[in-house]
Amino acid sequence: MTAISYGDRRLGVLVPSGNSVAETELRAMLPPDVTMLTTRLELRGSSAAELLAMLIQLEHAAALLGHAEPEVIAFHCTAVSTFAPHLAGEIRDRISAATGRRAIATADAILAGLATLGARRVLLVTPYVEAVHQREVAFLGAHGVRVTGGSCLGVDSNTEMAAIRPETIVAQVQAAASGVVADACFISCTAIRSAGLIAALEATLGIPVITSNQVLVWHALQVLGIHRHVNGFGRLLSSTTIANGPSRRT
Image: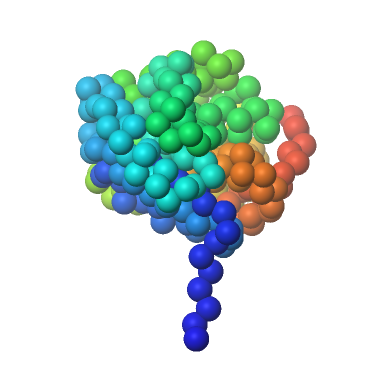
């Protein structure tokens, strides 16, 4: 008989339909006793109309996840959940109303992770088109986090984002970080291959690095009451207690 770990805890995750990266990264970082269950919502491009249309079937998709009785349901799309300062709260409320279960969004995880790291000044690196990047800058600013530097690649679709080579992301971060004072680096987007870059970039930059997928895992574990070290994916996941150190000029 082959032993299979099914996990005693269940996390439901709603992901964009065109995203081929998030589930792989999330599973790599979640401890084996947490089972991840996913449902997709339509999203492939980055126009404002496409991003907001992802929410049309939100209740239906969340209800399908609810049938599997997850403890928490996460809406996992950075660009949509940071579209406006109030939107993540509305998304949470809609999911909870449809399922009777606790809900979180990527935007919640980002803000909670940065707060835990004591990061008020952030280097923001994204693959997005300019409009999406700037909305994220505005979202962070509305919550007291100042973007002191960064860049975007102008990529529109989830398929193109998944095709970005990890070394391209590293080069983008290093170029954007030159001369910038920041408390943390945020590599945004659930659809890019960034989880494996975190530890090395932290060593190079001298500041904590978070990514959309990594910070969602961290936040979900906190909400689930699972306070456990997960090594290999940066300071946030490797320690539940973060000592606030001085900012670094990267």
